[in-house]
Length: 278
Image 1: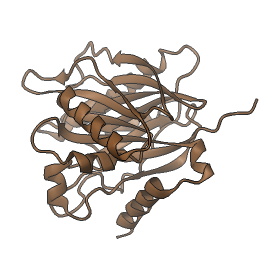
Image 2 (image 1 turned 180 degrees about the vertical axis):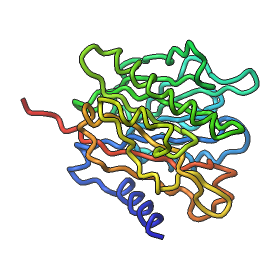
Image 3 (image 1 turned 45 degrees about the vertical axis):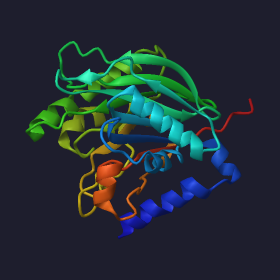
Image 4 (image 1 turned 90 degrees about the vertical axis):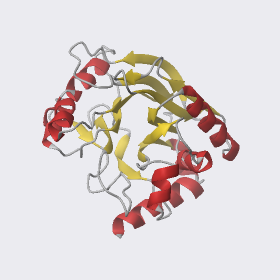
């Protein structure tokens, strides 16, 4: 019950708070949109699930048409104009491929550049992670998205999780001085799984932002698993003060939400972005 209250409290904060403090904060989210662009979707509900955030990384984007339709719907209900970035091509297997994408409020977020796909020379990932760099006030960051394998065995998921260390290092090293790297998406594992141990022991003091006790997938009778999260470095991303959450979009109608919207909740972090006067 307390977890549900937590989710609804954040819904109120995100939707209705217009105080001055919010202007120096940014809400950065991740969302598995469940085959966006395929099948029957309630795009109005999807748009309401996305609009509270300043930037949201999307996985399971099946085609550009679905993303454009979602962009159109969110602009209908928003006071902001929205921009988008989508990976240049979908990744996956011959039978199943998906895009990575970002939607962001153009009056708050500046798109800097695409950083491209992680060069997966050893074929460690079923879908190579993708990154793009953005800036909000003085906070510039590279947001890497990943949709990990589900597979037939947990060991397959754990293998991919163990290789995310290499993904972090690759994108971090694109900047010779420092780089704020956020790695978000659907990991199909809880972030405290032992497979992430090497990532969490990195010298850059990497942490997961969302408490794994918060369930982020939607079952037929309630919330099920903690598969969605955002990893970041406490050494570099000092703008993150520990505030994070998951947005309950179900209205306690889990079956309908799974069918018409997604079987995942959007999850988010809050970062401080106050512009220095110096």
